[in-house]
Image 1 (cartoon, helix red, strand yellow):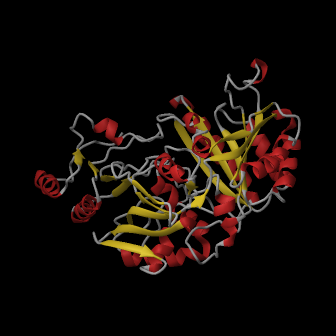
Image 2 (cartoon, one colour):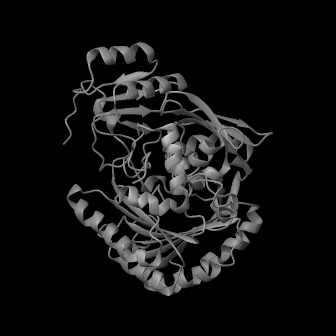
Length: 470
């Protein structure tokens, strides 16, 4: 266990920060320290030297300058939902943006200005008031900032692309404490790196997103099939997906899904296949496009319906509660061959926890329409993403669940180039080599960007490249 002390910080240093900081500062000796250092993933148990709840950009600048002056590691928290726990650190400073959660919508220009502490639910609440949305993730408690900086895949990705593809501009505080705006017309290289580069060069304080007409009611599909027909269902899904319209974004998930209220008693604890879809267009057209998802085999249960878009965005929230234990990894797939599907089924059936899943996320569509050199995001050419999620409650089962994910990905890597989606990173095993493989041709460009804006590696989190390459 880390030693929760302020051994690297003097009382004078703390008084100095207090004098130039408007928000709340939480220290290890404070009553609320344990709550303040807790994040969504119950596996993460880190002890920062100081937690700085920023009230605005001025506080972010003060925190960055303080960290640089005192040689402190910096972690940045918006929603705290990164599975690897990168929102906290041992012995450093947590720049907590959760109080900066405002969202302002311009319905005429179809844009939204989003502060970095906002969650997906915050954004959907404001944008849906005007029948608008921007591509975000699939759990409403997720922080917009971390999701977007890592790319951002969600229920609108095939029609409107990634979260980072819909950025018009950002405000960012770089390692020198300076405030900058980056867009396609200003600090262009910085803007390139922010879109999918993992937050390697600074702390984004605000995001300007383009919005699109979505909802307020959308056609959705949610169909469960018995595990015994998994091979048949996944092959039929593959065939349908090849000709599905871009308006329809789908996800197929294999696991137990032990929800007693959804299934007959004899099926609750049995292996199943879930097929999910949402149509970003007129609900009438969407229902016709979604109908084949219920015809991939003999359904166990079909919950397809029209529903408010914001409600669909919250569909998975209860499945990922705060404090449960999570370990997720990913790999981009070159195809959905029979071998891929068969191995995915075998690994899903072998999961130690009934709450775990092996998921296939179809990519393509609008994601592939963006040029490879237009952003730092890696994986645009991959037709599918494999996500392996271990979700469990008992700490004594940590080794079994983590081992299952790692063994699965080691096996499935034969069907991939080895690159990963940075928002499903495990604990960033592989370090710089993993990042180099993932970013490919963009890696050297990111290293140069890091050297320009953060040469001392102030933001030296595991998901960021080093300012100099070996």
